[in-house]
Length: 238
Image 1 (cartoon, rainbow, N blue to C red):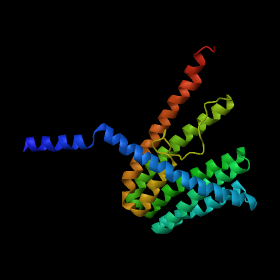
Image 2 (cartoon, rainbow, N blue to C red):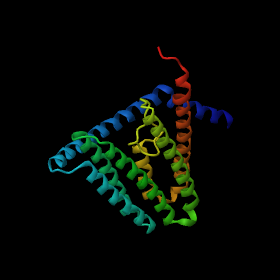
Image 3 (cartoon, rainbow, N blue to C red):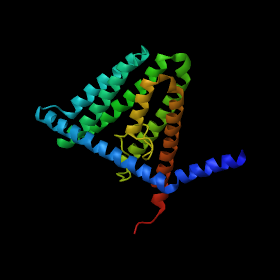
Image 4 (cartoon, one colour):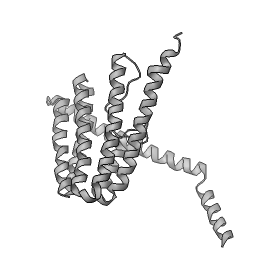
């Protein structure tokens, strides 16, 4: 029995060795890049048409937010299909407003508005899942909101000091609040929301994972801040 188990393990190792795993990962990465490229072209083409019609980036931002916040109501009623539709439209408009801004002019207020409404939207979605099933989701939602607030405050505080010091070490405010160095970017967060709307019973597990990533992100920003604002200043300039 033991020898058979060892043989099975060895076969699995041979099947999924490093080179094969790297090839599979490279293929999936290239596929995602191609899909992302096609989506970007579609969004840019639509953005150019909206610019010609006189539609501003801020108008798209606010409209997308209003549609997205309806997801909170649908989640509280456990109408997950409608909630998913609102979430997807919100994310589409979030991509559109950036494309419109790049085709016209990126403004400080536009960046502020986009980032602020994104935070409110994500927090609202978490709140919506708590309302859907308070007995099962409330504690997990509270943990996720706690972690979300921690990472958001750390990032915004860093941005304030960086702006004050006119530092080049600035953080991307347009990113998802669950962004963590390429590990949990906006696409992965969107996938998590889609999965939650399709399988809402997984909220506890996914909330724990996302919440943990948020806390790690907050800690990583604190370490980055200490390095850039303390250690880097001690190094004499050449």
